[in-house]
Each structure stands twice: as structure tokens, then as C-alpha cells.
Amino acid sequence: MATGVSVARFLRRKQYWMKIHRTAGITGAICLSAGFAAAVVMVSQSGDGQFKVPHAWLGLTTVLCAVAAPTLGHLQFKIRSKIQHLRLWHRRTGYAALILTLLSILSGLVVAGII
Image 1 (cartoon, helix red, strand yellow):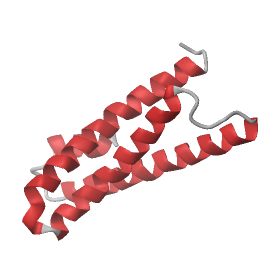
Image 2 (image 1 turned 60 degrees about the vertical axis):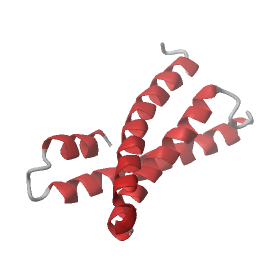
Image 3 (image 1 turned 180 degrees about the vertical axis):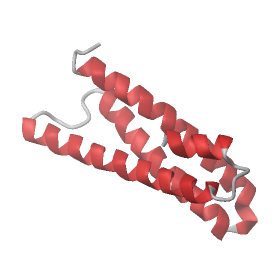
């Protein structure tokens, strides 16, 4: 996801930026979704309840933002009458997903007792 944000921020003048940006955003959303699914399975197998710690809720919010960002990015080209509104929310959810990913990682390390 950091690649997608960086490409949009620094390589926008290049002709190929959109393909890389789109691929990076979708790949980031897929990877975060897969990690979330793996975490749900792992917690289920351990016998603990789901969503008992803030880290779990933070992870869910992260995945939702990570999926919403590419969806909104795609919709801005399909619903041209709402392009400004969709572009604003695409950017907001993209940045939010990136920040929430970092916070999720850090809170997971705290839950695991590493930091």
C-alpha cells in the first residue's frame, strides 16, 4: 500500500503511474484481507473469542479502509458526476489505511509482548 501512495504522490507525471498505483492498491488490500482472515482462523483455533482486544478492531478497520480505497478509486472513473467527492474519499481512505496498517502492526507487537 505504501507503494501505491508513493507512486501517486511522486510518479504522477509518468505515463505508467496509474497501472502501478492500481496494482499496488489492489495487492495491498488482498494481502491485508488474507492476513486478517489468517488472524481470524488462528484466534478461532486457539479457543479465544474474536475481537476481545483493540488490536482486532483496529485490524478490522484497517482492512475495511484498505478495501474501500481501491473501490472508491475505481468508482471515480465510473460515476463521473461524483468524481470530486469520490476522489476525496479515495485519498482519505488510502491514507487512513496506510496509517492504520502501521498502528495495527504496532498494536499487534504490543499484544504479543514484543514491545
